[in-house]
Image 1 (cartoon, rainbow over the protein chains, first blue to last red):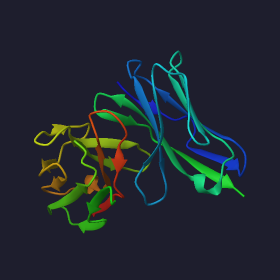
Image 2: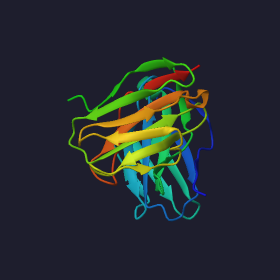
Image 3: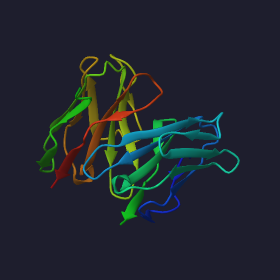
Length: 110
Length: 112
């Protein structure tokens, strides 16, 4: 069945360093992927998206990479800041609309 | 611009009680969704409404009903609450059938 999983449940990064959050998906037919950020006590917020006809997409301090060969998605955050501390979810367009992964908690160390 | 507004933010119920979670969006979006979020699990879709007048089951619809009251409002009803329905519920909306989802702040429900 469809599933979206994350390699690491928690990622600790020094402030100023780059962060890389990984995600694996199982549905090779998925053609649209999104990364969301969820701060404590709040709803998820859109970060960046990518369609399957692209390998890379850049936003402000964030880059999403898509490797369709190994069904892998990653989110790179440049110069990580304290405000980046949150849980990050990847999601793919599946049968029931978006299928969300379980999330990775990013901790930014001062 | 409020975006997606959910009420109530917190609710405690006893097993067997009923309640309705309300959701309203002011972005003129066509599609609306109800998700639940449990510890260690991703967001799971309960029901969605692709457009006004239509509703469809998601991944985990059992024990829930929904009403798309108009284009702005989409409510989720628990007819007979069970402890397994203890969760954080999120309402979301999107302009079309695909595209960015805009989420509300969540409603934390505890069923004793």
